[in-house]
Image (cartoon, rainbow, N blue to C red; front, top):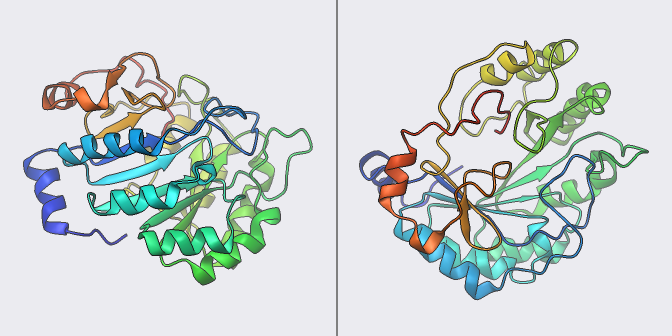
Length: 294
């Protein structure tokens, strides 16, 4: 991904020690109901545009380099393109994470004109799960992905989840993503607290297969050894940087540690300060062990 104003971004990251990413929930409402999801519903209201703009302004004051819009399903928000346009003037990178099903030619064009930098499309399996545990599947979405690849002026990648129900389709999913010419990431499914829920064979072998694929995509450049260790039932040590390098802002405008650890921090983003950022850069969360959040 190309970063606008790279000198400013590097200054914020290396000198000011600003957060790298601010994840902003624009709604909890989603058009799908995935069996493992604890972050969405079918009834929540859209966060008002003016409230979201104030949160973007607060992130901008902290020098956040990348702002990512999440849900629920962020493409359901009627002002998502305007929000991208507003954010683009203030941040180095603007991204969206979506399940892709609401995509239309108009939405793609609106996001092109708004200046979106990157879109992550969540795909859990090749085919829908008859039990509706895995709903985000590639085959029903393929025509939209082909349209997206033809028309999007922004970068795209797919994001899959390795779990018990997707394991049998992972190899075929990776191959079809390769056929589409779209890079893909794979993450380990976690429970409602963020901890991993699978381990052992065949997951270790599938993970290694993924890491060797030519369309293996990594945003951070990390090769996935941490997740591999979790799948091998090892206990890798690491220090979470949530609340410092990464900020998660819920639908109420509160900073949380992450999507799986809501309710522990709850500071309004407008009141978030360098004291919190510097403090949480060195403080243990107590939930790092077994965390599979990527």
